[in-house]
Image (cartoon, rainbow, N blue to C red; front, side, top):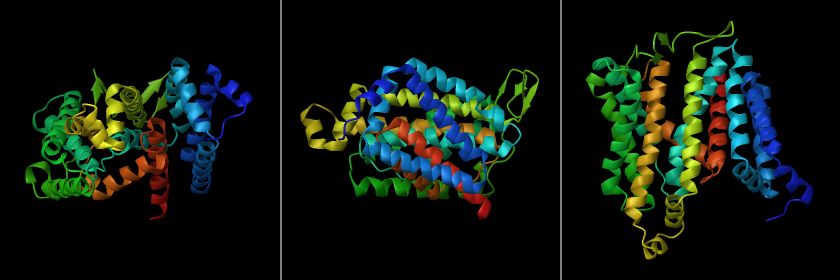
Length: 354
């Protein structure tokens, strides 16, 4: 791998370097979201090209090392930029909606990365776990009258339970056989919600209640220092908080013994067994954690859009999430989030021309 010049390495050792990278990333993201189609696609293309050139120059690895050395400046500046990000987008709720969806897809992609990136399991059913969280949270809130926050917890746990029940008998398979099982799971889930009347059937579920804190509903505009922001900002902050938490948990897991076990299984399962690792248990853990990430994203999505239907969680959605993980770079936490953001932007911008 080409080595960086000494001057460039010294710059990246400064904590201000990670702050500057965060500012640049958010500035590019704002241009990609806030400007018209031609400018947005141009910015996205330049970002992809820059990432490819940076990878060839060995710069990406150095940047990740800089983030590891300066975690607090990186995290602090990121939180500050997230808080001020909606200010210039306040006049256009749709642009904030794009940011919300990018955060949710980023969370799902982080969960899938445990499987595809670490243990080399191709899961085609991420949309099923996404939908399980959405439907569970919605039904708990509407049928039982519980708080949407409790519905969020139940949606996440139900998705984890589904991952466990499906993974327990199937994760002993490998390669194409595992992929076929997940394809079958995704197909069965879609057909099940279409043909089950008490979950709305093909008509879906409407009028899902929003999150609330005390008397403040997330469906109401947010007023800060006399400035009024559309209600989408409330869900942007919520989704961004879950994304930051998910990225932190992912980075810690990838650097732990569990993450190293996953990587060893992905590289050579026989070698993992020789080291005393139980591949089935390790894969099941990755499957359940990934399902939990998707279930949490689905719960937030349901209470955000207030209407869900089978088309929101079909096989195509699973394929899109797989593409996000591949585009960002498997087994790469920051790259997966970037891949999710880029594909969400492209999908939303192209929808204006369909």
